[in-house]
Length: 226
Image (tube, rainbow, N blue to C red; front, side, top):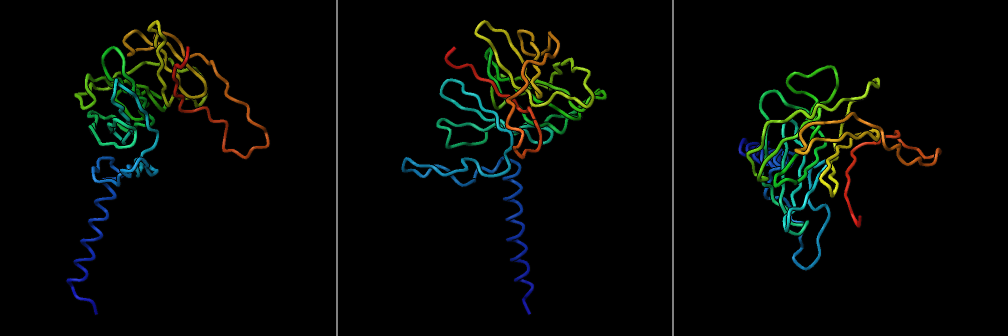
């Protein structure tokens, strides 16, 4: 028969394991395994754990990567895209929850985090609303979510999700969402000033491919070479 001490020790190991797992799931465990091998090589994954839908932005020599987390978000920092450390874990108060694929951007000297939110104050019948939170520094303080007031097209069952921001060299700002829709934003990037227009139908892959659906989701846009 095992002693009481044995079970206490086993329970301590279990608790320690659960704590470490929860920290990893929470995205704020600074003692995660290092991807950098210190010899010019690195191992995948660079950030192990539950980190879906990452969004990354470069500001001069610094890289910042954001992940949604239930009723808030987490931002990590790196200088080389291999060694990452958490900068901030931000929680929104006042009834905001079920935040999904975020899009982190930097313009007008400020960080902008675009995000679809399922539960929010004053919610109408649509499943999601699209918001932006703004900060001068990645560690905050971050503003309360600002409703972009996207005019969602009257399509049965459609709700705009997975925002993807882009700005033209002339400074015009646009927000792309799922199913190939886009709306122009004001110069501050905080309000839609046009209707959602369908501008992309997606690539028509071969009909005999076994796929779940024709899911045009999570658009991320970059300007390169003009």
